[in-house]
Length: 141
Image (cartoon, rainbow, N blue to C red; front, side, top):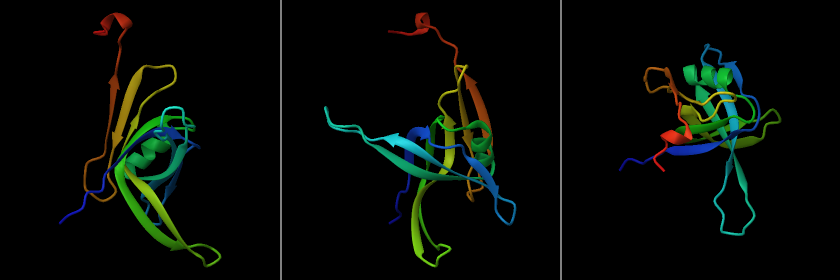
């Protein structure tokens, strides 16, 4: 039986993403998003800080178009990996591999941008821009 591994999150980037390159030249960007947790009525709001990693064209576009405070939608998969730190201690990381990142707001404009790209799934990397121009008169309610 095959498992399902899909993660969809909406949150704000907590610090400016930084584009890096692997030894083979592959683009990678790591970023963390703050996601509000659902709470019971009257309960104090809590926030989770979720580490995300994007690859290739997605990584380049996240680094180019996102900054601290940007509201983004992340669609990807959960990944767990282990490594040894500089002091020789074993560490484990759980992160979201962001296969698609949607820019949900843009200062000074009313647009939505979406970038897509995979790490090793062979999908063609694309970027699309959809302008939304509406006034209150256009809304059906």
